[in-house]
Structures are given as C-alpha cells and as structure tokens.
Length: 291
Image 1: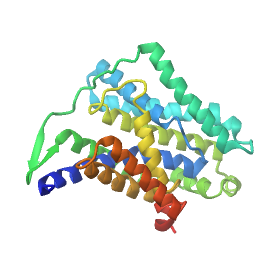
Image 2: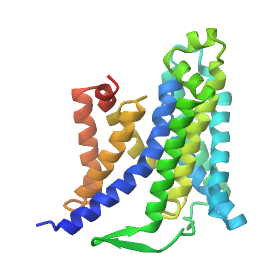
Image 3: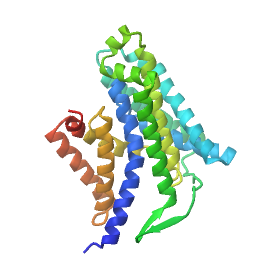
Image 4: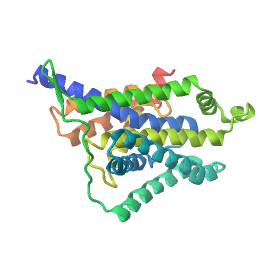
C-alpha cells in the first residue's frame, strides 16, 4: 500500500522535473517547427551550457553570471551551427536527413573534443542552497524549486518574445511559410539562425540549471536529449503547447512510477507511452491540442 505522503512527494518531484524537462524539449521542438531541423546536437549543447556555467562560476563565483555566460555561449554555438553547417545544406532535397546526420556528427565532435581537451572526469557544480522546506509533510528542495521557477520564467519570456515582438512575428511567419515570408521582406536564413540560437540557449540554460543536481561531464547531454526526444514525439514535433503538456505529464508518470519500479523500467514505460500515442495519432498530443 502506497502512502499518501509518498505519492504527494513523487507528484511534486515530477512537477519540478517536468518544468526542467520542458525547458530542454521546447527548444528541440521550436527549431523543428521553424526550420525543420531535428537537432541531434541538442544534448551536446546542454552539455556545453553546463561546462560554460561551470567555468564561469569558477572564474567569477556568481551563479547568475554563470547562467548568463552559458546562454550566450550556447546561443553563439547554435547560431554558428546554422550558418556554418546547416545553411549550406538547405538547397538539398534530402535536407531533413542531411541535417540529422550533420547535427549528430556535431554532437560527437563536441563531446569527444571536450573529452580530449579537459578529460572525462565528472565536475561538481556548487549548489544554490541546501535548504529544504517541509510543506504538509512533503519535502521541497529550495534548490529544485528555484530551478523550476527560473525554467517557467524562461519559457514565459520565450512565449512573450515570440508573440509580442517584431522578430517573434517573423519567426512565426517563417514557420508557416518561409517563401511568403521572404516576399514580405523577412530573411528566412536570419530567422533560422536566431531560432537555432534561441533553441540552443534554452538547452544551455537547462544545462547550467541542472548542473548543481548532476555533475557535468562530456557525455552528460545524452540522457536529457533522450528524454526530450520522447517528450517532443509524444507532444508532437513543432507543437510547443503539446510539448509542454507532454513534458509535465511524462515527468509525473516517470516520477510516480519509480515508487513501484526501477528507473530503467520507468524509461521503458515512457517509450511505451510514446509508441502508443504515435500509433493513435502520428502528430502526437499537439495534433489534438493545436487541431
């Protein structure tokens, strides 16, 4: 018999993890929705963000500056990836496949390049705080709560940017029809670069935010990328609202299921949910929400 307290604890843990997972997954689905790129280097960009934050906090002692530095570094990485690697491929008929191969190669390059440069050992990131709140018998880590709040604020800022700014309007126009947007004076190649930069910056932010919870090391990005991939498949590639719903739902399922099964079995459950959703609706949850 599972106690109510344990169930409440896992629900809270799942909610917090869902906010962090949404931060990674929204970036992955955003660049697909705008530029039709399934970025297999997204996890590597998460890793670069973690390392950028690690070295920044070691140099300055400020976690705030570490967050800013990680976002700027990974935004630049995303911009360069679009301009240098993806833009030359856009005229090809098989661009979708070519872009996946190139970004996968970039992921291995970044991972192994860092491994050669600084080694494979895990590096600990300073904790924000060790304080724990006890609310109605549920232990709430202040650190995880702060990470959740920052994640929600970052996503809210992204939505405001896309919905309320001129550049956000250009991003939405290109996502709907890049050729018509070009006729209206919008430069799609510039929008692609900015969007991939924003997508990467979200991954970098997630990397530095989660660094206090997990050590940073060259291959740290693969597990978050796998989770984000499952989320965007369930939520629907290109559907931001579907991705948000899927991130929160799957995170809660994963957290609660670990009451009864090991974490490896919980991953199997997530894959089973993904397969079931895609069998019913290949467009994922977004096919119902956005439709």
